[in-house]
Image 1 (cartoon, one colour):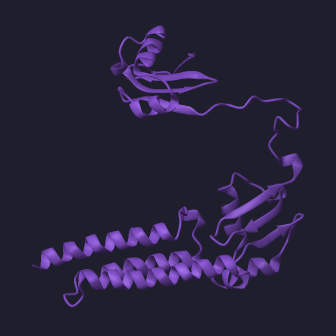
Image 2 (cartoon, helix red, strand yellow; image 1 turned 135 degrees about the vertical axis):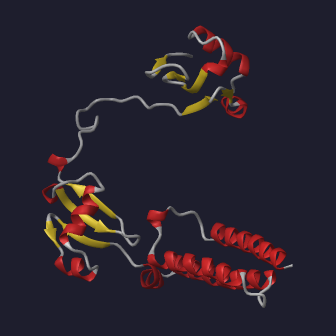
Image 3 (cartoon, one colour; image 1 turned 90 degrees about the horizontal axis):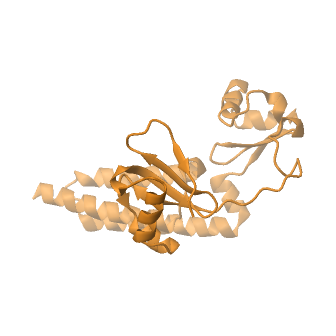
Length: 235
């Protein structure tokens, strides 16, 4: 009976956690604020502590997660409506560097040492502070920056070059198998795909490890037995 109870609690707990997570929205790990991190830990703790406690039933798990989820949902809504509550619970961006000048007060407030700051910048592909004009520390702990123009990457707009937009690419063949749903979505047929592959010299789909296609660039094909990328054009 104990094994059955544990299984029921795990199933109930997983469903409850998924529901709460979906209600609170999608976020990447890098987007989590300290508040988000805390509620995630508590949600996991509710499930963990209840699994081996015989006095806690599956319905108790549902109730605990439901109450916690409702509280979090209300807090999220209040945070969206009132800036003061959002700042209090989730924090706000800190300006660490403005116009090349350090904001020592904000650095100390966020307990950041210079080497920590340099590590965070290197993760953004910046290896010298002389490149940085403005630097923000976001609530989730990541940094956003703006470089001085002379250190910025050259863009086509700077050179007054017109660049054509590239169409979306679609995966038609995945490890020798045709993706029928994608073909249907694009408005192509399996026969069209077979004909195009034969035109490019591929007699069977089974030899194709990977084949993507776009309206502008045609096919990009990789086979099982080739050492180099094989790029070919198709309609």
